[in-house]
Amino acid sequence: MPRKKIEEIDITNAEAKEIIESLPKSSSSFRRALESYLKEIVQIDATTAKKMVEELVKEANLTRKDAIMLVNLLPTNPVEIKSILSGGSKPFVSSEQAEKAAEIIKKYKP
Image (cartoon, rainbow, N blue to C red; front, top):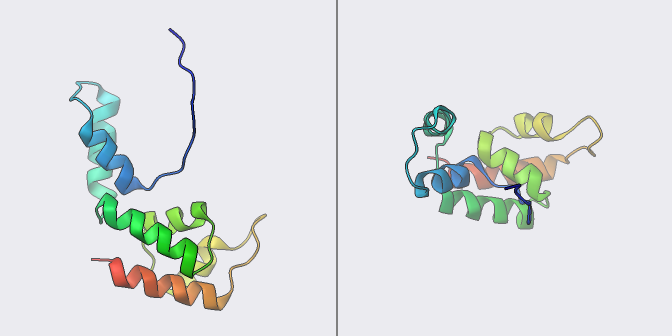
């Protein structure tokens, strides 16, 4: 039976890990590889990731996609943040936005 996409939302790696872990266990090699990868890279829990995304959107005036990217990478240096988020077809991120984002990330990063 064909599947129908109902909605599409961007989520953090931490949220993806939480979803994968909540599903019934499977012997799928893709599933095992995905779980292994997420266990390696995820440094914060899903609840904290959601809070960070909300705060980055509200206080640093970032788009949800950009906030999710920062939460997945957890950079704490404003210069790194500017280089990650600026360039290409995107507008450049201001120094103030990058500094505010760095403050928020440092507050939550383990």
